[in-house]
Image: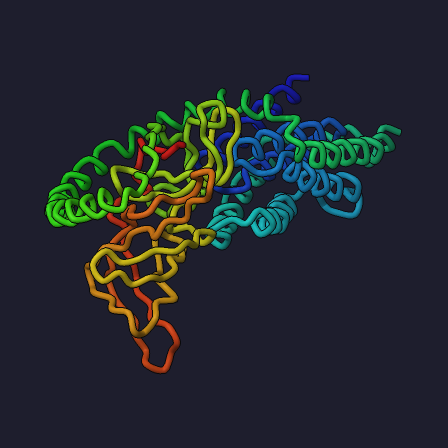
Length: 143
Length: 258
């Protein structure tokens, strides 16, 4: 429950920062982090909320970002057995590829610059996560 | 197994978001959107107000001196025009109402690194703002309203790649199309080779108002010609236009409402 509240607040804060100050896919990074750290169904709810706030503050059609986030998280969670998700390079690479796709689809002005910044941020976040926070799966994938 | 509920959750939320996407186009979520915007836009307004106050004032003062000289020349032309109007009993244009608004956001901008394409201002349909209304600072055109919600509006800058409208030069009267190039740059295009372009000449709007009064009023200043590209083998000549105002430093602008 505590992690859900923290994740919810972090997602909302990421949406505000991304919409108003820094045009990097911070919400996507936050959601992928939560999806890797806790493989649980309520991550989709975070994707819905983060996408709605982001679309509202950027004057985009409400729902379009949420659809993209949910699809990305669906790929991540439903195919997690096929990926080595606990390694920090996976998180970085997955964030980079999905972030690049999001920047292209959302019509970002400075795709290359934002893409580089996303990679650096993701590398830092997932390296920190791997060293400080062990991943807690709520599934029975590993026995 | 807990894993089995992931796929139903994924499908459920995907369907729900798709429904929100299509239903949202009917405008049903406007009250929710307004509530979210009213909660968070004032935060960014404080940030932009702090960074933009100083530079706009000094630059406006310099331009004011220069424009005063041009206004003196315009006054004599106005007297002639008034005499002609009195003679032919033409109707005067309807009065313009200026609505002062504050810039509360510049989506997609990294301060001092990237340039804005749009502005978010704190006035919407409730305050009488409509799509295609001109946004100005003094008599300088900044952009035009492209989207509105109840209490906020999105303004597309004249330098945006999505911006394109008819203009004319102040001195020579050459007519062309002003096309935004992004990054604060503008191009005056589609000017006939037979028309004369002069460096440092002012570029003003030609006027594109419809019967409702919406659109760009004429003679709003857009910028000055900085360089001219004239190739005899081409059909048209082009010119680069520099804005007189720093679009990324604006804090207060005015919407021309009708």
